[in-house]
Image (cartoon, rainbow, N blue to C red; front, side, top):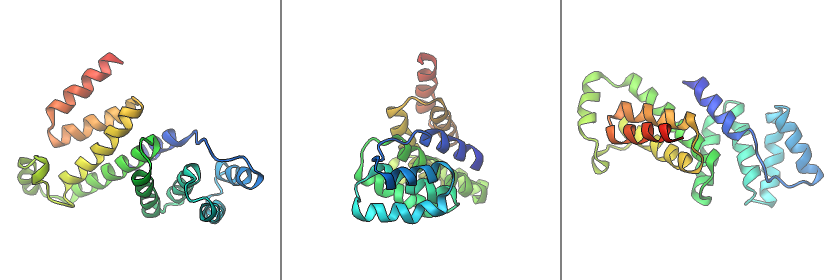
Length: 182
């Protein structure tokens, strides 16, 4: 699952654009693409102190955190981006996959009896905060937003997996039908 998350995240973020072209930022981009994430992080933070609305720099910083294994800081940055920016595919893919992985980890530690009880309560207002089912719902919310922006087959497959786990037959049919229409 972690490999799938990494691959999907990498594919979604392979073409960062919009980072301005002055010499400092070009060298930061070069370091980033060379995989020098530990060196890039302080430079990006410095850049964001003077230009806090630089979406490309924010995403590059979040990705740098992710690539060095600091998933929590990557998550925090992407949550901020999602709150301040609408319709950013990379952000939605990251957050959707973050919650998907978290839900799968919760599923590993949830007993069969707990799963049966929780799956009986699928309505939005009956979800318990922090539960496996709520975490799958959060994953699907972000991945649906990403899928609306870009009909990516990998995102669609993840959504079908989530809806299969949560028993949402209507959404499974919807996404299987959209695959036939693509």
